[in-house]
Length: 113
Length: 112
Image (cartoon, rainbow over all chains, first blue to last red; front, top):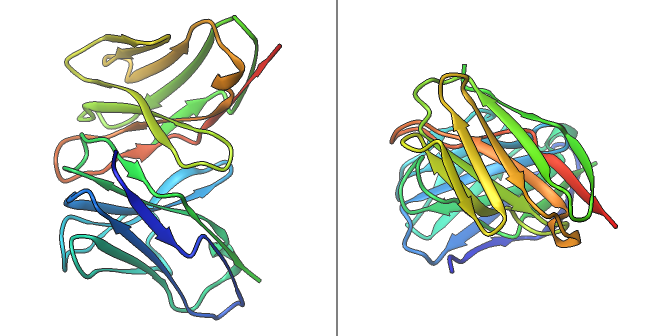
């Protein structure tokens, strides 16, 4: 079974604050993704990567940066958090790109007050 | 257009009956259609998928149908049980270099 671990699981920050969400996968997968989940919107892709040092934008990248430091580690950065970024964030990995199963982490709930 | 539409957003069925969720997609190049189940407080997990070279796929009480002409695919859960209560997401993706886009989700409630 694929293993994707996220931290922190819960985070509260103030508007304008700096937040880093971390994700580690131990599946030797090439692809890693950051999605946000909001009621009425489903899962929307923020950023993804197909290898260390690579970064691709998804459908809702504004206000987010990301960095893939190794094959295992993918970080999502909110440098000036806003209340609109209050959400449940999921990291996922897959062996290949679009036609492969996504394995999701446990989720990170972020509240921006 | 790359959107994936999913309906209904909420579905309430009697235990033992069938439940159907429908999705439509815009990109005619889409060729992979997975379905994910998300139980309360959990992460989404793949339950079944279908590729564009098939029209029907069945596994363990789940049936997926794909109509490429109509750009529509659907999930049918037969003989629903309380354990089927969850959020269900459809997704679609095209060839390599793209990513899975998700529908907005269906909350399925199976009542006794």
